[in-house]
Amino acid sequence: MKTILLAACFLLLAAEAQAVSRYDPTRMSCDRVQATIARQGAVILRYQSTRVPGLPLYDRYVRDERFCNAGEVRARAYVPSADTRSCMVYVCKRPDFERRFRRRFLQD
Image 1 (cartoon, helix red, strand yellow):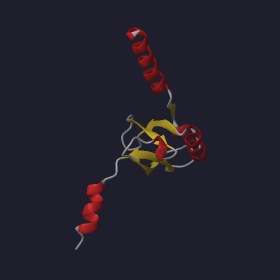
Image 2 (cartoon, rainbow, N blue to C red):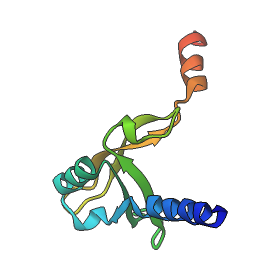
Image 3 (cartoon, rainbow, N blue to C red):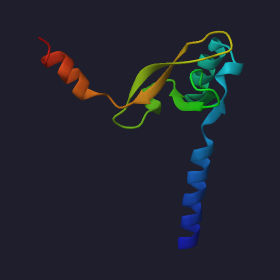
Image 4 (tube, rainbow, N blue to C red):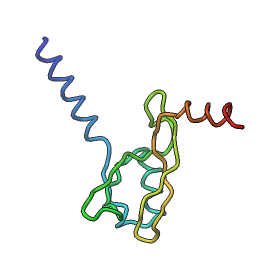
């Protein structure tokens, strides 16, 4: 029984890891990138850095905060696409409360 339960747990972990699709946004229009994220909820976009040749960049981009972990919020980000250098998308980030505190209370 323990073996079956352990095997089921591994299968669930493997299925969850396969759930997020991966795309190259530089081969898609900005509208298509945004539509893909809206349709799937969360995707991984992978593309080459423009500042450092040969350096691959990637992140998980989401439709809304329901796809973020607890304590994270949706933040605006930009990726290159086939038709524009900066296509607006969203990522999950932890809020930076310290920076907000400094800006709000420590201004002269």
